[in-house]
Length: 158
Image 1 (cartoon, rainbow, N blue to C red):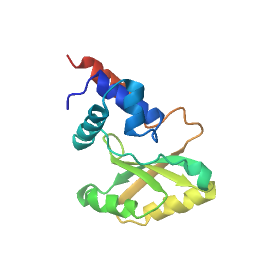
Image 2: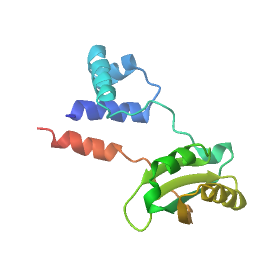
Image 3: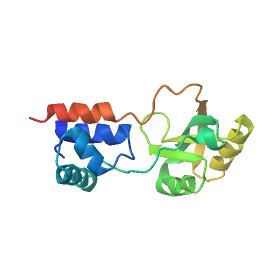
């Protein structure tokens, strides 16, 4: 998908102020309302904007512990069934198939370290994991940082 500096400006504004509305965004950017709306529609239809959903802070509603869990799976078992199983665990917030020593990387939240152990035990209940390894997050410097890459892509457009 081709994006340009106007797209980048629109996405930056809506990222900074997600509740701004198209009319106010058009005023601030000096663009016609129809231009802002059509650009947003294009970015959504093209998949560049995946969601307008709020980003939730899990620590604020009872899950102050966050960890990355690497899972090595039985090679002939595949990843699809495990992915479906992990999706049914509420504390598993992300699942990625990855390359390297492990096959699956998950982000998990928990109410405490003891609760993290409960979640890890739940993951191990599936028959395909051979081994897990976890790293507890101590400090998050930033996450879901996609705006700089989006702006860089807009700069590359001739």
